[in-house]
View: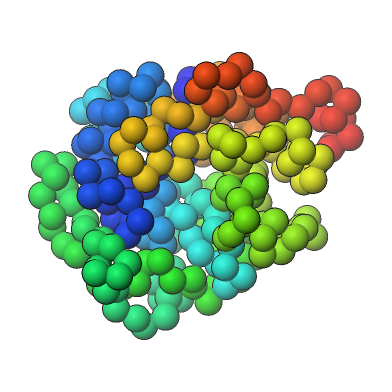
Length: 256
């Protein structure tokens, strides 16, 4: 199964307005992906429409969001259902500063339905960090049955490396995400205890299909994904390369 866990819809103020759930699902299908997750900044309000769009295109989906922690690092919270993702959204909304989005400065934040109709404009400033510490978010995600992934750890902003430098090991991450530009062996050495996933982090339609993961999953669920990560059977693929982020047997034995 080919899957991408980190795509932004038009709800993210930094994403293109053409990134509707239906357009994302269609482009993912064209790119040869079997499954996706949309992880918008600090909200999952477009996940119900995504679930419908993916069903119409015959691909699977998980429901997620990209949360900005109090440490100002980004992390993916991925769930099986829109209900769980929206429950996490309510916790995140309560932890956001009471600031109103200014579309002219930060971008539009439309909530849309399957037919690309705008049903609401999110007024909260989704680009702001929450007041929730990373460990508290990890506990909340786990309580809701989700999986917790450190976003784009190789980036110089809003990442583990930029904000924390290193990890104590008890932050609660299930995996770390690399961008398609990362030197995977380097980050494997830097954070040896975390499995790796790769994502497109697509903000525009043409970015979908530039990086993905491959794994033999019986179904696209959090439980199956968690098991594949624990077994180190998730392979990272970047378009145009045959590189993967799989650990060697020696590295796997060391991690355990």
